[in-house]
Length: 346
Image (cartoon, rainbow, N blue to C red):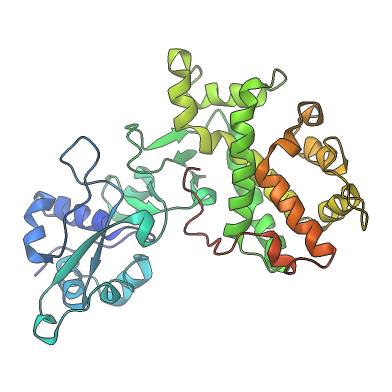
């Protein structure tokens, strides 16, 4: 079917690949849709008639063959690059007489695999020759493009931006470089990286909201203005919503590193009174440790540690495990904390 080769980008959605195929042939993506029999309606962006940018397409085996021939790429390469490729045939229970029909089913990317973010256009142009928007599955610790100093924003949030410029915020890229060390320590403890990130992100997002009342907080407002090209100005609240994940990422990595640190676990045990039960001390050893790691020595004064329900839940689970009433080390972490599903807004 195809005469031009269109290679997939690692982690790309099938809907994104179909867009690039259409662009390569200089046709509208809607002109290619009749090649498949669609089993449901496409997800639409709220208030518009357009299909959501974070949409995904699941294909049966005949439908996959159509796309492979259209791209002139073998199916094995597509399976390696497209995260939802293998689960496509599982979404269909067609009778034998329909097995030869090329079937397609719409789904949201977040439901099919995980959060979908915009790919870096310069990176895409270098790899594919197309300076085009690409939708890729990207978790919270995969959003930094180091070579181009960009933070990939989540697709279909309605803000109209694809990325944030990180040139004024080198600490965000530095946090990205520290993340692999957190992962290695988590693996030694038998904990999934997605679970660690989920807990750390929940803690920091709660602090992000509480920080509006912290007079001593200077780091986040300054970083937010830098992410907004120097000054958020009258759009402060808009930027605060759009840039939250990038602005808090260094603190998320710092908290995640603390959560998998055996030294911190011992501090939690000391704060808890050991075998004697006592209330969570707001200025205990754990709070002091986090204060130093986050460069905020006043965290104890504002009660940040006990004010975070996510952190106190983790603290309680760890203490119960040490006292023999829990479920082991993994009892301190949420179940099913896979890397694919941990970047949704709380």
